[in-house]
Length: 267
Image (cartoon, rainbow, N blue to C red; front, side, top):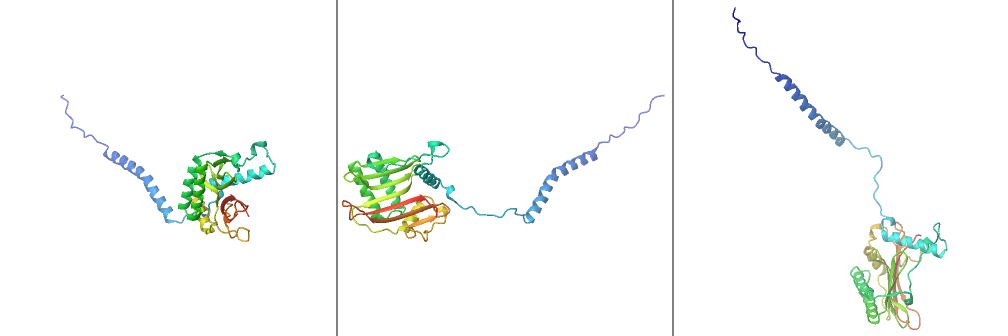
């Protein structure tokens, strides 16, 4: 008997399964996003617990290279004069910069350096015109007489002086920290009497010029000998002082000097 043809059986395709898998994939992909959304909402909507109270940053002397060098110089001087060589032997011995012309090195280029520095101090109002002009007259004398000398201490502070060859007395002398080129001592003389500058205005200008205004606590040191001529920062442990006076000696009588000094100091 011939075999009867059976009707074709329809092929069942698993569309439902595909849809379920796709839905699962989408759900898994959205799960991290949903978690982040819920967690961010919870964090932003609730006050954060502060484990440590906020304190603003306060500058101290440790934050300023110039002050660290001044402190090192002070300690080195104490060690040297006290003959305390420390645990490392003579490594702590400090050598100061020379002050007399015979012990210093001649340098014409230092005259140009002084000229530029004085003008910078004038522009910054550290020196008023009267004393800046006196300083420039001293530099002019030094250029003509070849009497500009310098010396270094063992910490890198450089002393630059203009001398009168007949007196061996500096007409002008500055000490700068070599790495920053910031002055820590300024000494100016004049053969003629000159008025005393507004010393506190000059000291505040010098603080800003030396980038030390960030300490923020500069005040006159009350109940001290420097209350009328200095500004002190307890945070930095440094003092800026200044003043004028009459030159002494038969060859210098009638002249005046201006001295400004920055040094490490603690009361």
